[in-house]
Image (cartoon, rainbow, N blue to C red; front, top):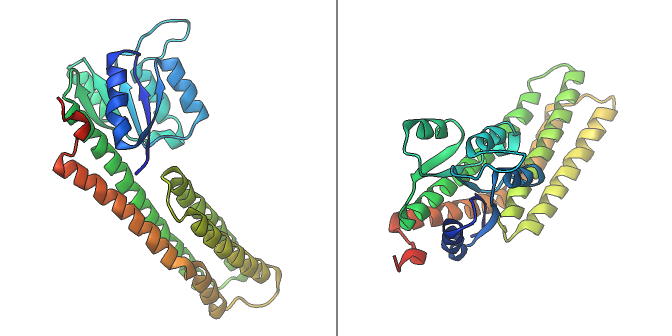
Length: 266
């Protein structure tokens, strides 16, 4: 289990404690000690599995970026917009918690907090993110199948060729989406899965390019051939989905049993 975390926290005891709590849980933690440093990391990196942000960030220097502004800036960036966020705050006002509900913040924890509660919320946030990824993978699979089958209902040959090219683009985006997550989370069969993706895409592209170049009528049998080619790797996808559900189950088990060994001494 490997999950990435961006910790936006001033230097001090809290930062050290959070790093100690997350290390045994196999999290890879990047730390930003102030708003500007966090913004630089956001600009230069892909979103992590979880952003932990302290609302009590120092506002010093020429560039002043607080926690609320960071949340706004992340919401304006497409890939960071839906990254789950866990907020730590010493402000118990209703405004803080109302604001957190609008910016993909899974939870807001009032300081000082129980370390067990902190780890519990971390796992809940990660679980929501993983559950959303599984739903998106399944949605894309269904959408690809629907797109391909819808071609059979078209009669205009130019419209069919245009739709086939769109499907090829959708297939490439789907493979990139899956492989990015696999790479980030150390999927054990990544290389084999990548080879399968390349084979499926190259075969589909060769077939679609041939159909689009020729003057022959694109029949239902040809479309069925594309469907068979694209979904030939369904067993590989089943293995990947099983891997995701295993991850999800491990997170659920952790939350249910309260497995917080790192906090055992507290």
